[in-house]
Length: 203
Image: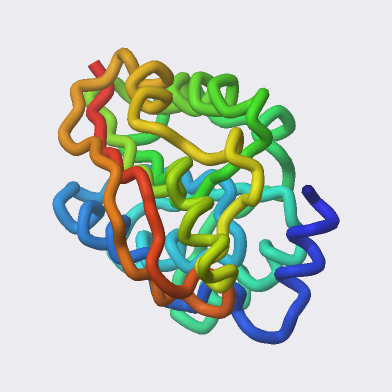
């Protein structure tokens, strides 16, 4: 996985563009700025957007090339983000420190999905918010029709509403739905897609 992402983010162009994910941006605008964690943050488009809105941003990703791009994007926008290189088992943050966690296309190997979410939960304050968008299991149909829509080819790395309910069972659901959207995000998220969108508040 690390080699895959380093190769992708080493390309000259931004893999998913410089603009934030539309859903993340729309939901973040509803929350008073505080401390936010952006896991699997890649080239930093969402972290930089949050920093521009006065959030204190922490981020991490497996890819050192992703961090390099994120640092450049932050500098271009005159903001700072605290970006660590490593997987979720390697990085560590204070317990119950964050007001928000942004999980935007944070696809991890299937056998690690629940562990990943449970660990992130320990970093979130009571009443903290999770903003989540990622490809649903139905997205494979769209990817077969249009490979430019992107996303993992392994159905077990994709998400279902039921998985989100299970992994975030200690959250009040504000929004949870599978939706068809048209993505226009850089080189690798383009076209009709099936996604899970979730906003939850930790009890």
